[in-house]
Image (cartoon, rainbow, N blue to C red; front, side, top):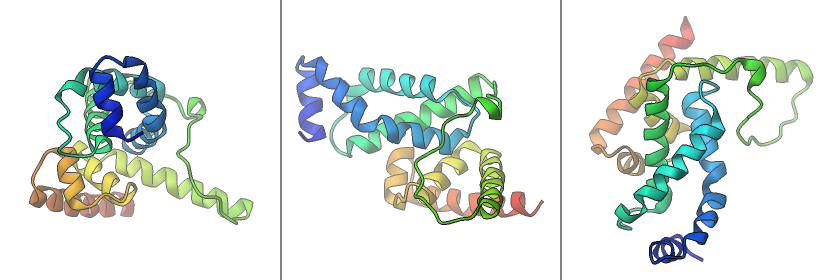
Amino acid sequence: MEDKQIVERILSGETELYADIVRRYQQIVANLTYKLAGNKLELDEVTQQVFVELYSALPRFRFDSKLSSFIYRITVNVVCKMMNKSRRFVSADQDDYRPEQPSTDRNAEQQMIYDEQMQQLREAIGRLKDEQRTALVLFSFENFSYNDIADVMQCSLSKVESLIFRAKKNLAKEIKQ
């Protein structure tokens, strides 16, 4: 069943179908949350909050964009709100989540170097301003077009271009240090 049909049926009273939306998008929300916040937030808590807010927001969804864009927008908002509201950090040994990654043929030493570089990159991305980080993650890791990013972030195309440009520039400075 298509997203539009499921949403229409949920709104007409078949609320049990909401579980299909959760199953369909749960991993996407978790991956985006991890890419935006690293291990600074409890992924389960954020994911749950995203789907609570999505359920409340469904009546406002107008089908002028994809449901996935609507979910990305809510996820970005929830992550930013939770990061700003509660500055708690999860220690690295509690962080058992890793986004889905393709398998590689690295030896142990190469994998250690790669893991260390990825950790440094995640930390540098985490130090970017919220809007820059969001635009960069959606563009670089989620392969969103500038138009899709503008839709998710509810801003102009020129602002997206500027955010990504500044994010790349600031990220390059962070990595050099």
